[in-house]
Each structure stands twice: as structure tokens, then as C-alpha cells.
Image 1 (tube, rainbow, N blue to C red):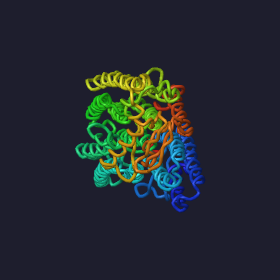
Image 2 (image 1 turned 180 degrees about the vertical axis):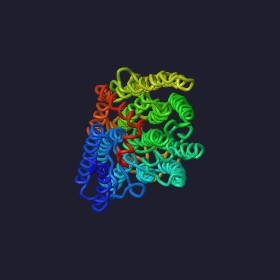
Image 3 (image 1 turned 180 degrees about the horizontal axis):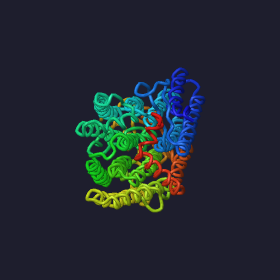
Image 4 (image 1 turned 90 degrees about the vertical axis):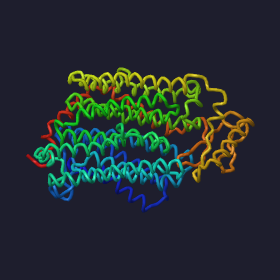
Length: 563
């Protein structure tokens, strides 16, 4: 089984090379290859998770070079679970993107640009989960950075370029800080291998060890969007295409959380910065959920709830007990799935009505009951309504806080309860505005959004809005019998259609009938989130075993270095 450990990284990279050689030709074959590779990665992830649960951590030294010279990949319970959840989510998002691209007739660009970048992103995520040393963890982050910049700016609109530039600048800053931390770690310990560092860092002076811990936590907190290092997220993610936003919001921030879990338990046991982590967790909960309350756009609402619920995971890491670590792992798996699902639903709403602005939406529960169900279930899951998995994760964390006692723990228990109630309020607000109430007068005409991939200068926006208003006034738009001209395209839009920003940013025509692959992928994502509730007992048992293994450290060290 050890030979399988590198495959979740190697398979996507090798297929990406094949795709770049083939180019944009053989579209159906390339789509099939992408689905087959991500399906194989999912199967491999499940096998690694089961093997790590039964036999302990699996490790492989690439090139048969022993630490500290060689690259070490390790799969234990935690990385196996993260690989499995992330592989399932990325496969579903790929199916969703295929449905959206085929509906928009994007035959060349998604295959030629999106698919290779997406597979490289998957390889980077797998590399970070399996990394057995700091340098390989850094490499995984950089692979994700390169791919994510391509995906964030796909389509080339000015809005996406600006948001992507902000994301890259922040990411490059964290990368430089990460390199400095790696250099300092090697200088004081003579290695960057996790298993060797677990022993050698205990002999380092406490001040130096605390400095290294603080630097690594800062890097991972930026990646995870922990307050006050999360200001970049609400303006970066919502501008991207729906599949990109979904996988970024659901998965990429959890890579930072995973890195915090790994380093805090393995390298810095009994860490001195636990109180600082709990302060950051409480601030993330409060600022994130209050920001969500103030938003009127669904994507921005979900972006702020993402920041808020990262606080739950940091809460568990800060307490550093078996129950809190287990609860944090449950919540990471739950949140990857549920947050991704909600952003997929937001993409469906935008495609159907041309906007995610809540003031322009209404009546979706009556006009699109399936869409209402797809939103309602993960929304209640995010809010932590019993007996859903969100409730299981929050209950585990709050019980751990009560058991730990102390001022910070009790403050976080109270903050967790308040954040959960405010999340329920936010989800109820979205439900009431977008689904339950009647559509406001003129909402369908206002919902027409015209956007061009070439530019979005103010003058063009005014012309586009004028075209949309004229079409609506003349009986066109979403409900009339006239025509709407899309942003410089000069093409008439048939009645019953809405013009909105497409998969790559160009103007497209959407109708009230949503593409079935997008609905199917979202429905399976909802079912996956519900499966955590059905399998709540085994999931909790597995995560508690993973937490015990993390805190013990010995199984990981022996798997890498031998007894």
C-alpha cells in the first residue's frame, strides 16, 4: 500500500502534461480523461484512508533517499480523510463545471485552460495533505497558487484580474514568510522533515521555538483566512466563475487549517500560543458572522460565513485536546462539503436569474422548488440544526471547551453558540429574501446582467444596462416577448432568457431550465453532506482515533523513521 501514496499527486500532474500535448483537440476525450483521473484519485484516497486506519500511517521516501535528504510522503488517518473528502468534492465540482461549460458552448477554452489548471490544483492539494516535510508542504502551496491564479482570472475581465492580483500579492507575501520560516527551522534543527523535527525542536531554546511557531501560524492563518488576516477573501472569491469559487471556498482555506493541525500537534506539542489561537478563533467567529449579516449579495454572505466558521476549527486547534482536535477534524470535513455545496447553489441561482443580489431575487421556492431544497438542506447543515453534521461538529467542540474550562474556553463556547444562532439568522434571511417572499416588482428586469470578457469600463456597463432596461421596457428580458442585446455581441436573446456572465466571463444566454449535470453534481454534494449525519457514529470514532494518533506523535514518527 505504501506504493500508492504518491499517486494522488502524480496522476493529475501526468495527465496535465498529456492534456497540454494534445491541446484543445479531442474535447470529449479530454473531459473523459479528467473525470477518470479524479475518479481514480478518489478511489486511491479511500484505499489510503482505510489502510491508514487499519495498519497505521503509510510512508514512502521518493527515490529511496532517507530523511533529511529525500522527499517523504505520509498518509495517516487525518491526511487520508482530507484526501477522500477533497477528492469527492473536486470530482463533483468538475462535473458541475462540465455542465456549465457545455451549456455555454465553451468547447475550447475550458478544456484548453480550465482543465489543466484544475488538475494541477488537485495535485497541489494532494501534495499538501501528504507532505512529510516543510519544503514539500511549501511546494504544494506554490502549485496551488499558480493554478488558483489562472482559475481566479479565467475569462480576463477587469474585475477578476483585480481580485486575482490581490489574492496573488497576499499569497506571495505568505510564501516569502514561509520560506524564511523554513530557512530558520533548518538553521536551528538541521532538517525540515516533520518526523525528525518532532524530536529536534524540543531541544531548541523556547524563544526560538515560539518564534518559529508564530511564523508558521501566520503563514497558515493567511491561507486559512483567519481574522485579522482574512480581508482578502470576500473580494477575491465571489468574482470567479461558480465552480472555481465553490472549490476555493470549500477546500483551499482548509488546506491552511490542515497545516495548522499537522504542525501544532506534531512539531509544537503543548504550544504556548494556544490563547492567541483562541482569541483569533473568537474574533473570526464574531467579525465573519457580523459581516455576513450586513451583506445583501449571496456570494458575499457565504464568503463572510466562511471566515466565521473557520473560527470553529481554530477553536479546536487552540484547545489542543483529544476531544477538541477530533471535533475540529469533523468540522473540517463537514465544512469542505457544505460550503462547496452552498456556492454551487449560488452558481445555479446566478445562472437562472442572472444575479445573486438578494434584493433582486424572490419567489424561488415556488418557481424552482428543487433549487430551494438544494439550498435549504446545506444551509441548515451550516447553521448546525440537529441532527445534521454541523451540529455534531459544533457539539464536539463545545463539549471539549466545557471540559477544558478556563476563561478563553468558556468565551469560545459562548461565542460558538452565538455564531451558530446568527448563522441560522443569516440563512433564514437568505431563504426569506430569495426563496420565500414573492419576487419584487421589476426583479426579473433588474436581474439581467450584461458583462463582456473584453472590458467592463463604466461606459460599457451603462450601455449594457441601457440595453437590458430597453429590452425589459419593450416586453423583453426574462418575461416578455421582445429581445435583449448582450454586451456588444449584437445577438438577439430569445424570450424567456436572461443574459448573464458566463463560465469564462463572456455574455451568455441562460434560460429557466438549468443544465442537468450542474443540478446532479449539486444534488450529490447535498447527499454527501447528509451522509456525514447518517455515518455520524463511525465518523466521530474515526476522527477521535485520528486525534489520538496526532497527539501521540509516535505512530507518525515510527512510520517515517522506523522504530
